[in-house]
Amino acid sequence: MANYKPDLSCQSKFIPINFSEQILPGTFEYALCYIIENKLDLSTFDTWYNNDKTGAAAYSPAVMLKVILLGYAHGLISSRRIAKACENNILFMSVSGDVQPHYTSIAGFVAKMHEQIEPLFTQVLMICDEEGLIGRNMFAIDGCKMKSNASKEWSGTFDELGRKRVKLQRASQRIIERHQAQDGLSEELATQDLKQKEKLDKSADKITTFLATHKEKLGSQGKPVKSNITDPDSAKMTTSKGTIQGYNGIAINDDKHQIILQAKAWGSVGEQQTLKPAVTQLKQQLDKLHVDMPSNEHTIKFTADSGFNSEANLAFMAQSGFDVYIADNQFRKRNPLFKDSETYETEQEKRRFKRRQGKPRLFTSSDFHYDETTQTCRCPAGNDMWRSGINVKSYNQEYTRFCGYLKDCKNCPLQQQCMRKPPIKTGRQVQFKNDESRKKLSYIDKMKVKIDSPMGRRQYSKRLGCIEPVFGNITVNKGMNKLTLRGQEKVNAQWQLYCLVHNIEKLQHSMH
Image 1: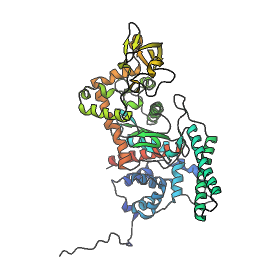
Image 2: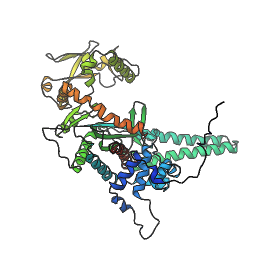
Image 3: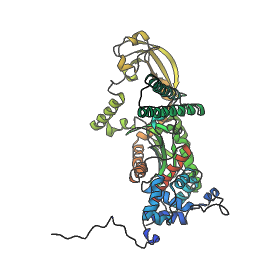
Image 4: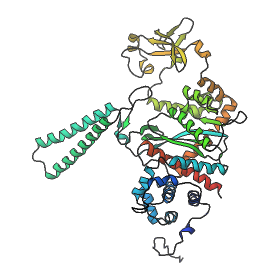
């Protein structure tokens, strides 16, 4: 019979520890300590403290930064878990010099460092540049949607929140009416109901205070959009795993070693609207790195996916000095490689079916019979339509617009396939490009020609390997997949700390 030595992994033991020997060269914590202690200027944190004559000694900013970034690198994004690790984990004890900051100190440090994070981020970029990790051949931009520290149940337009408040007040009133109708309720049930009423009243008051102290948010088209009571700067976002209440972490990186050059978190702002400020901030970072904009002999390429494609963005990027490749929604459909692919068409049909929720495909302008010579149009049901507009401008192009007669559309057997909702005031509208407007190439048209070329497809294909692994490393490998703070400034600082962890890890590999 076999005889093995006992397993003492759960046995406590008193042993002498040399903290400096626990931080081994080549590890993330070694690179982290070396960079913070020898390379970074942390004097900007001194303005936080004025305790040289009175008051207790403060935790060193270097120690706080080390334990926070080490915690983030191990997926410990909660200040309580980082504080617990400083008490029990030998690695955290070694990095901090056996200092155990309270979790409130850790949370407060992260929450108020929005002014210090930019200089720190730039200093780390300078070290990356000195190590030759920035190639300046291609930059790529993308976004990563992350959950915020707010519930999506407390989201809605002001009208929706007002209706929710009324419902809560009615539910509270019903509890009072039930008590008045049933005097014989037991003390236990009465206490339970009173607690429920207090909870409902508190929620209703919360909505009342929010509506009184905040202005309603308006979208790009001037229509009201949803606000969140817990974190007004966050937004409801649709992801592949459902709808979340969160922020979109935008980042621009370099393709050589996937160093993040620019990072910022955005809440209730569309992805298209983030391109211009992100590129502007990128140029400021390059100026700090003493990098001149490229000459004609070597132009830095810049890639982005279809979420950033718009006429305004392409017009801005045309003056940016970059060699730009931004795809549009139909880019894959025009690709000859996907043209005869049954798998691609099957997956596309599945997505369309899911978006339509089982409803039939709606007619597009290609399903209408438009005669450009006679300027007439017939709908798929064979009914004539009347011309409602000539030279109608939309997205810098001119169209001729037609509208169906209301009496025809109301009784049309193809109504469900033609209109999303039954017609009330007007029939189905459809528009066609004018010949003259077709001759005027927009920036979107020019980009389509550029990105459909063999060179364009080759350059754009590099985007996937340039930017996507960055978000995979941050959210999956490192576990930094949600945000613990609230408010645009605080969340932005935390997102940049996440990106800082990624850049320091790249430095770690280069320092071997």
